[in-house]
Amino acid sequence: MTTWSGIAGAGVGVAACLPQAPGVIRAEYPSEDDLRIGGARVSRVRIVSPLYEKVTIGIDDTDTRDEGATWVLALKCAEACALEGVEYLDMRLVQLNPAVPKKTTNCVGSALNFAVRPGRVDALLEYVRDFVESNAVSEDAGIAVYRGIAFDEESSYARRVKTEILTLDEAEAEAERLGVRFIDSNARKGRIGALGAVLWGNKGVEAAGLYGETF
Image (cartoon, rainbow, N blue to C red; front, side, top):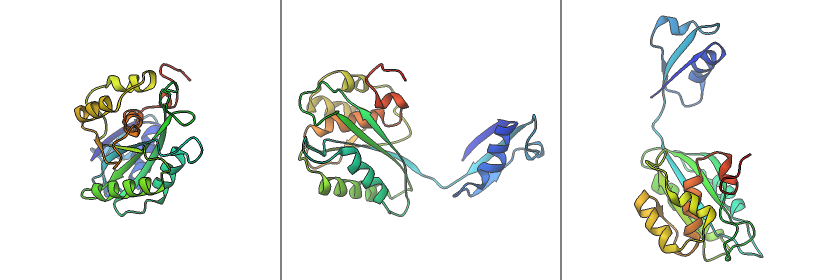
């Protein structure tokens, strides 16, 4: 259940339009006044919808200098997903440190966000791993997974992955500390960028820029 409130036009949006969204089970209005929508009035509503879990998947190093593109593979993976109980939300391109010596061209990871019904997460992760690893042209591909809306704390790794040259050991240690799981079979350098993609996958436009870059 989520609670919404708005005044004037925003009140129309949350009290009249939002309850008609696909998947809404029911809408509850706290009082009769909340049914008087529009004008200079405040409208409130509680929306009851099916339970979903947010899953963020970071992918990196699926390509080589001569072939492939990680963002293309990630996007194809998400758009081809037809699993019941799994809804693809969005994709983020994450600029990593362009100064690293072992990279393809731009050093960019990809993050996919999904909403997943209870009991369907394992099926999603199996699908993503199989799709990525069967279509990757690099043996370094990394896949990192975080289950949850947001991290409990800000990780310094988010800054460092855009500004420093990190090691696989550092990535794996920070992932364990944050509750991020790697599901790839390679256990190679792609995990460094995959973790970075997860950490930036729910941030704004700054995810696509160099660290500290403003838009």
